[in-house]
Structure formats: C-alpha cells, structure tokens
Image (cartoon, rainbow, N blue to C red):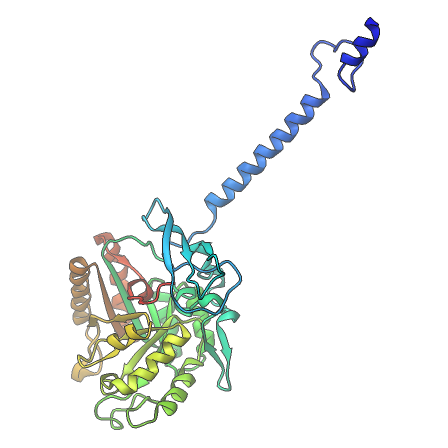
Length: 390
C-alpha cells in the first residue's frame, strides 16, 4: 500500500533516483532558454523602434486602414508627445458618420509613415499620379494623401525663428541648375520653370541632394504680351477650361513637387474669377500655392484658404535686378538680413530669388552662417498655412 501511494505521489516523468549534485532539471533548463529567447526578442524590437528613421517635420496623420471615399470632417487627438519637439508622435482620428461605420472608427496614425524615405525622394509615388495625354499629373492618393505632404522635406518642428528661401528658374540653364543644386544647402527650396530642359533628370538630381521642389506657373502680368512669361501663360482673357489645360500642361512637366508658385502674373493673380478655377484645381490635386509676393493686389491667399490649398507668400524678393538686369551681391545680402529680422519678430520669413550666379553664391555663403545666429533654414512647406490638415 505504501509503495502504491508513493507511485501515485511521484511526479510524472521522474523516477525515484535522486538528482545528482549540480545537475539541473531538464524542465528548468528548457524554460530558461525560452525565457531568454523571449527577452532577446523584446529587446530587439525595442531597439529597432528606438533607432528607426523618424522625420522631424510633423506631418498630418495618414490612414493605415482601408481608405474610403470621404469628406474632410475629422477631429484629431494627440496620443503621445515627441520629447524633442513637443509635436504629436501619433494621433487618433475620429471619422465622422459619413466616413465610418455605424459605431465610428478610431484610427491610430504614425506621422513618420506619411513622407517619402530620403533615399526614395527622387522617385514619384505612383499612388499620387494621374496619367494624362500630356504626361503624369499630381493627384491625391487613397485616404486623401497629398503630394504636399508626401514630397515635403523634413525639418526639426521646433518653434524657433525659421527662414524659407526659394530659388527659381531651375532647368532653364543646365550649368546654372547644376551649380544651384550642388552649391545650395538642401534646406533651400528649388522652383523649376516648365519651359526648362531635361526637367525630369534635374528634378531627380535635386531630390537626391535633399531639396524640396516646387513648380513655377507662368501667369499674365500687366503689359502682356509685351511682358511675356512664356509658353502656355494663364491669361485673364482665356476661358477657365483653356487656363486649366495650360495649367495641366505645366503640372505634367515634372513630378515630386509639393506645390506651385506664380511666375510673374500681377494681372492674373488680381482677378478672382480667373484665380478661383486654378485654386479649385490645386485643392483637388493636393498641392500648395506660393505667392511670390510681388503684387499687393493678389487675391491668392483668400481663395487658397477657401479651397483648402496650403498657402505661403514671400516677404521679400532677395535679388531685384533693377536697370542693370543683374542682381548686386550687397543688395542680396541686405535682403537676407531683412529676412532674419522678420523671422526673429514673427517666427518665420520667406524669400524668393532667381538662379543668377550672384544669387546662388550669396545665398550659399549666407546659408552657411545663419544657423550660427539661431535661425533654422526650412523648406517652404514648413511655413505654409494649411487649411486642410488631415
């Protein structure tokens, strides 16, 4: 009876022989191996998350669920804070009843998933392209993804004084374009002229170098056609359909740009009826509009905000040519000093210039010094007012 009781009480898989001194049970050995493997897996995942690339710019959240056709009616709530900048590290978006199921949907979104990886910045995002008879056109992607967000260059996201500088006329001179891309810091935004040559190649070169890119669109100035911005100029006399055809021709010339900027256009930008159809088109395609700031009569800002178009306006033309037709380096430097004063007073400033050798060299020299004075150089998208952050 005693023997039977001992057999019943004995643990399964073990005999009566005592363990040898110093020898551990196989069960404990296997358990420790599994525990160690689990700890290593957790450590590996945590390390990967901590060192992965994270853009400094705080972009709008992007859906990570299956997209639905929707109107913009979202309420965004921050989930976490980025320790460096205080910007939301993720957000929750509550979709409206028209956007979601009966009970509503809460989508957690990662801002770092929105923009392109720097190594892929020269490649167009196929989800943001509409093929046309003229060539590829920018368009919103599924979930409302915009070229404005995806092609934007990252920045620190801090609230210090910021300056954005745009240098236009890229593509018109092969030598000057190459010089600008190589000499200018990548924070400087480059604006391409649709009449330029080898634009696709130069766009890719600029993007590989880290520059944000926008597109210049020729618009009717006062004195047109004596003052002529070039081929397919948008004019007040043309019908909205004609102007849209001309605009789409310009838009198809390159890819990977965040928005457009007027080239000349003092008369056109002063006409609400003419500008409205252009802003509607830009809003539909998810593009920014930059006003070069040369006309006080421009109605671009009000229309852009009405149509959900991110908007920025230049504070200063940094390289006025005057009667000499070439800019003066001392005057350029004074204009850049003016931008610094504006940025310190308001928080940001925007300057525009053209691809003159004098401009490129002066801006390159200044850009190498300005950060030491506590000012951050940023792409133009970083200082644009966005009426539709989603």
